[in-house]
Length: 162
Image 1 (cartoon, rainbow, N blue to C red):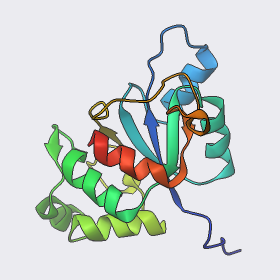
Image 2 (cartoon, rainbow, N blue to C red; image 1 turned 120 degrees about the vertical axis):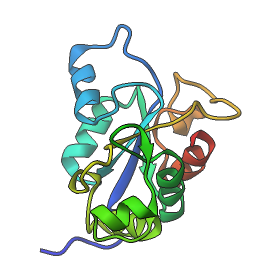
Image 3 (cartoon, helix red, strand yellow; image 1 turned 90 degrees about the vertical axis):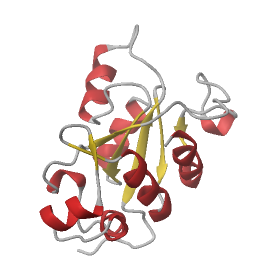
Image 4 (cartoon, helix red, strand yellow; image 1 turned 135 degrees about the vertical axis):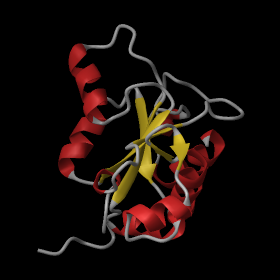
C-alpha cells in the first residue's frame, strides 16, 4: 500500500518543560521520544503510534511538520556526531551515501532514511532557549501559548532556537 503524499512524513518534536512532578508514564513517553531534557529536539515519523505518544505528553512538548530549509539549518548548526563534533559534509561523504547536508535533509524529509540509520549521528539536537522567549509554557499553541501541535509554525521556532 502506498502512503498518501499529502500527509507529511516527518515531525519535529521539541521539549519545552522539565520533569519535576511529572507522572512516570509521561516521563517514560518522553524518554521513548528521545527528548530527555528541555530544549531538545528530535525527528519522528508521522505515524499513529507516534501521534499517540505526542498527545500523551502534549503538556511538555510542541511539534509540527518540519520544512527542508529548517531541517537543513538545524543539521548545520546543531547536528552532532559522537564526541560532540558537528556534522560536516566531509563526515557525510566518508560515512554515508549522502554527500551534503542538503541531500541528507531532503532524504530525511522524503522518508528515504532516518537519523537512526546513519552511524555516529546523534538522534537529537540540543537547542538554545528560544530567542525573544515564549508566550506561555502552560497554554496550548491554539490558545496563544507554546505547547502542543503547531503545524508549519514549528519551523520559525526551530530557527529561533538553533
